[in-house]
Length: 176
Image 1 (cartoon, rainbow, N blue to C red):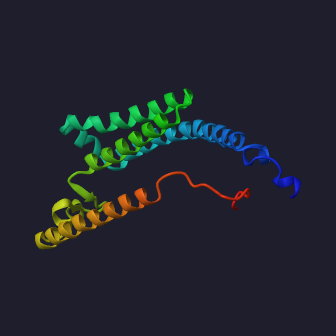
Image 2 (cartoon, helix red, strand yellow):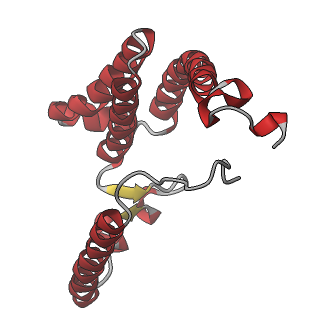
């Protein structure tokens, strides 16, 4: 046996805990810097969107209940920073998910009923009405989507239950 494989696996190469701690600290540091970049780009993108697509702010003014979507994005962004400072990784991740959902739903709400606005002539814009498939195709697609989701869910449940638990190695080797 060589010196490299001596000792329990958790103590080789600095120990797994130390390695995980180092990666976690670096990831948190990167996330703190990326948060500022995200906040600045959110402000910039919002200003540019309001200048390029004037119907987006008009849509918010027409339907004020839609302000819930940008507020969700702002709350998610602020919460991500708060939980990052508290080193609560799960809550920080969930807050960043709320930010993404808020940003995407803000865009959809702001563009509705447009799917793809035309820059030359508004008559050439794609709307939800002129971009959708025929009713027959939508019904067939819904049936196949439901069947596909049932199969995907069944496969996920089978795989999760079949491979549940920790993997144990019988040998002293790491396996890589």
